[in-house]
Image (cartoon, rainbow, N blue to C red):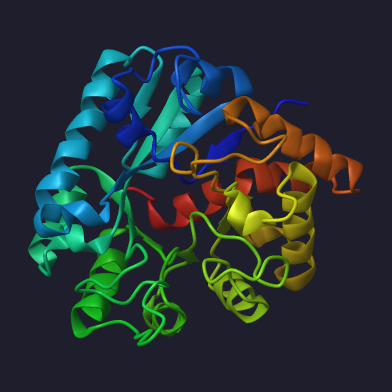
Length: 316
């Protein structure tokens, strides 16, 4: 059975620039490209504009540069993939047999502390925002700020509320735990973590505690299981251990909170069995062997993400 796969996080836009390749190049580098996406059944891919620390001083311009890469790739391969702004866009593309691309920003420093910039990015097609990376910005502290680990700033609170109003996905990946709880309290929409795993299965600050998993699920949100070896099991990162994370999350908060968020092209090393996008179907096979129902596997592979997108990006 070929599933409708949704992957909520990749850093491919940056590697296209660094490796001087195109999204349509088949297997010429990286973990993900359009031909491999299509052959694997990935119907919707989130593409992140990641603001790495060296661009902190010009984060807004850097985000615009990466967004330009995104749209140039969309134009070059428009016969196969299109950007989406709402759930009806996804439905339309799927009915035509085309792939869909959702534009995200990873790092709220791109907003330069201004809601007007947030609204401008929304007009440019950004539909998901990771509030922080590992450091501190105008919205909140990231998980790397271990000494202080503060919550949302006043601007962070205002940004979450404005994202709710606009219809943007609020992504708590990389956010320090106090900020996570602030978002859970403030957001009136489902909260997501595009790429994170279970901390009880792998004790890493980027992973979520059982309490966080339960609370995020209670908002109707979804957690994209990440393929980064350090977040799976540093001693033995492999597909089976990632399936352990999925099983644990299902036992904690139900299958409805589980999705995929590979972090392809954003991780230096890969786990055996999860080497590139063509390995995505292996997860469905593994879940089936562990006794998950077909309907539950469909939810994990993409259905849960589509549900959240339908609610938050309903179309205006």
